[in-house]
Length: 111
Length: 114
Image (cartoon, rainbow over all chains, first blue to last red; front, side):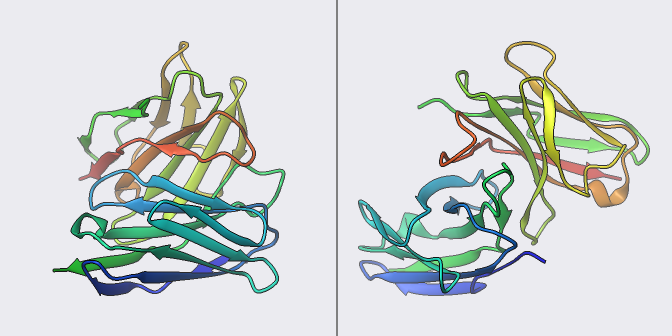
């Protein structure tokens, strides 16, 4: 089966750093995506990892370890507008288009 | 920034009726997708579409579902005879490459079956 696990909810304070973890067990692997989804809105692409290591994009960074089936999204200098759900999604094979999503982590940022 | 647009934003339909959800993908994108998200649950893949044909579909995408690209800009999802369990948010997405490129999502159509 295909399984992607994320914590259901997290809270953090404005200005802080938060790390959202994602573990996956899939039949194969050809890339991991992080999306941000505000309530009632579309998922918005944040980052992509296919090789091990850290990808940095402004206040957001994403890390991947393929051997451990593990990724995290790091958000720095948190702002109130970062309150949203963060979705981890895996492409399970090189010959498929589909993304398999986790249930998402709902992040609440408090002042 | 180019975006995927979906209409309507909310559709209310009686069980057993046909419904068509519409999407305009980003103009230079070649790969199109439908996903759905039942309230409180994860986003689920339905179907992918390339070169005017379905390239992959999930178990959810049974004979009641169909997709079409009727012209150069629209991409539609039709549900022939809706069931209560079809109530969900339906997202259209597009990408300009199959590999290593993100899929860009529209704002979704909330489908409510009564």
